[in-house]
Image 1: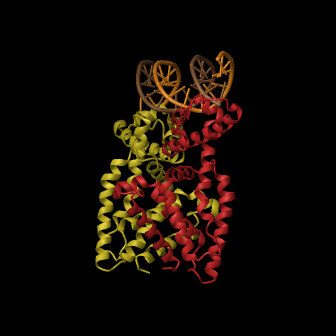
Image 2 (image 1 turned 45 degrees about the vertical axis):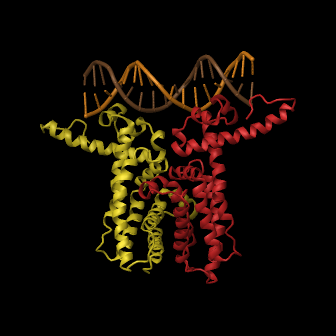
Image 3 (image 1 turned 90 degrees about the vertical axis):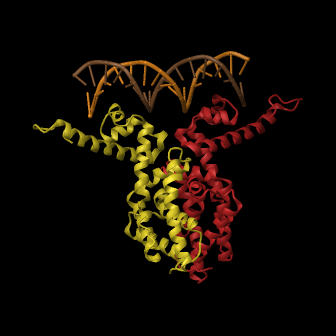
Length: 215
Length: 215
DNA sequence: GTCTATAGGGTGATAGAC
DNA sequence: GTCTATCACCCTATAGAC
């Protein structure tokens, strides 16, 4: 993070790399803030401060606050849906579900801010994410629901609506990130505690696998 | 809603009743708006408009925007925790859980805004609700967890951590209110559809009851 | 209780020097 | 690319007439 940098390295090339890193720094800071106070509660000044640049300079990288917000959101969505891709037709159903649930809870532990920002956006009507939900997300879920239906047809899991099954997994696993404040207020524990983390994974796996007859 | 009101009725007494109704109107409007755009996204003007009075007049009833927000939150919390009170030690476990889940999903259908506002507040760290969570809520949950432990000790339900059980029920049932946008984007359906509502209740009941060995 | 007017502070975004 | 200065706007809250 040297301010001036030494020597005679070609400034243009280094600047470009710095620019990318700078954008990432801003996106990280923005995720921090947006996930805590929402789009309207955050000020550009605040985000710029945390990212270590001036307000005007931030607006050089992102032309408006909403643009920045959407950029953060898109990045979050990618990370967030990634685990679902690994649910494959040729897996063993029990292994696949167990693995998926563990990955989701792990993400709730390691990227709670991403979960919360996503949650805030959806709860408020997903004004800036609606297209992503009705397009790519819907397709992805439909694809995975088809796999579950295949397993049902083959008698490998009990017959339950795949949508409700997926929603139940999302609901429970994300609850431990989104409602962490409440969970901590009640239990005094969080996913950062390895024992509590493992309990959560095991409990959720048992709940879901039991439901589809895979205990 | 007569502006002038006729006749010679005692103005003081009627005014007081109107005042109460007026407050309620404002609280309803505020819930609408806050649950959609959050505390910071809402303007007093907007809420006053929806409630049918002027900004200055609203501030006569609620001294500041944050005061109004907290008033709405408290009212929401009461409604929201009410179903849990009916979980009693002398109930039949299967009936009690089934009933509780149905009530929670019903609330998600009939009071989704309350659920969403509560969700927004918790996700953002519950700055204005923390005491309520660590005090009354924690006590209430502890009380109900004790009941579940009694049932476990008596061999009436399978032994699982009561906290995780309660969180799972909350997570799933509230998901259909808080993430309704996502659910609709993916399935095209909502709790307003009686068939979907019944599916949701049945699925959640099956999931939970199966987990505690009551199917 | 209800209004109009306005004070007073903060914020998003732009202009323009370096 | 980065900064300072500034504009233009919105919004909370208050003052004071009715």
